[in-house]
Amino acid sequence: MIHSLEGVLSSRGADFVRVKVGGIEFHLEASEQTIRSLPSPGSPVQILTYLYVREDIMKLYGFAREIERSLFLQLLTVSGIGPRQALKMLTATPAERLIGMLESEDADALASLPGLGKKTAGKIVLQLRGKLLQESTTETSRFDDIVSGLVDMGYEKAQATKAVQQSAAEAEADGVDPTALEREVFRRALLSLG
Image (cartoon, rainbow, N blue to C red):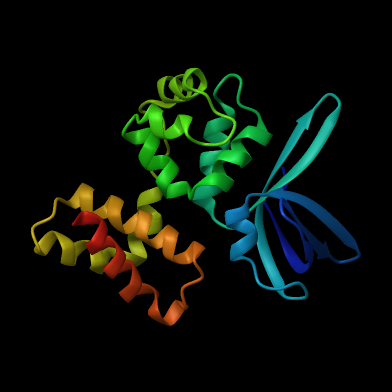
């Protein structure tokens, strides 16, 4: 399996990126979240990958973060969910928010995502109940101080962690300057906790 590609970002579109590695250019299907997080074409990049192989098809999927790739792979274990639908879900909402919907078994929120009905959303919740990888917590590790601060202010740790994860995903998706990211994550988490 191709675990990742490191090269130069040659181009990108609404649902794909192309990375040149040596003399070979790879075409990767990707979520909008991943595409937005990448630098401009001509810049060096490393993209995590998953090679999808079936009898009549071979496609390479790209991810900016491990949490997104892990969730994508978990979604593929649900009967009736293929790579195209899993990628649509990851484009519609950040991985952390999607994990929150799945962990809270919020089928109504899932059903509001493009291409999902109530029946499919219920099936996803049922089949992934208790099976989600807990890698979302490693994503929070760089914001541990914020979580600790919120706990010191009286919020429950699980509630604070979830708020920080969602705030971090939203801030990164909005392109917040990395130098102001921690302050912005704290501000957004505090607002979401009320």
